[in-house]
Length: 283
Image (cartoon, rainbow, N blue to C red; front, top):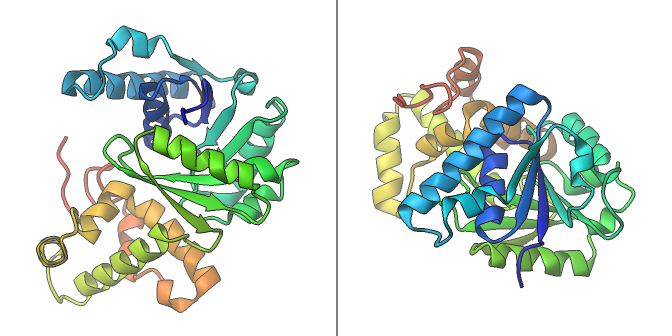
């Protein structure tokens, strides 16, 4: 199976740009919609930069200009009208996502699919605002998208078998591996990943070991490619806090965010994107 010929991405931040990059490299024409002109300009820079790196690394045989010619950036939801699939990639806030998804659906042609890149929010909950929940699912991409080989396909109770099959096909056409999960808090990856990261944070808080040594123990002892605290820095401490609070509200106190996480977020120590989290990030 191939990816849809025309794909839309709502949101051109780090994740949205990575999703757009993946579909362009796989052969799709992609339109990225952002909230205003400055955000659209920044999104264009992220996508074009990622494509340039792919050409430099030799991970695609296509010339750069051919890839760039398949990218459009817009601030108008009407740009999604000719897309067969739109992936929503706005920040992890239920109200924001619901409003965004409903607005996108209003501009889609009959039969077009809609997906959310949520890492923890209920797909069924988000689907409540949609007229066609059967053509809606979760596509949980991982950061950084170009290097990650996993995508969670999250099926809500209303997701049709046809949509589920199509989603698995898109993931495989992107050269990634689909993991199919039912709609449950945190799905599979976020639930397990956050549980491990929160415990690692508590160990730092209690003085059990340094962030470096905790991560080294998981990398060398359990063969994790990246430790849980460095992964938290890459994901963003604010993002991890939001997921933890949601999981605490749905699954109970074992997901209660430790104070060290709350304090770091309050100080603006958000990880790689701010230059400091559990580690220092230069450049």
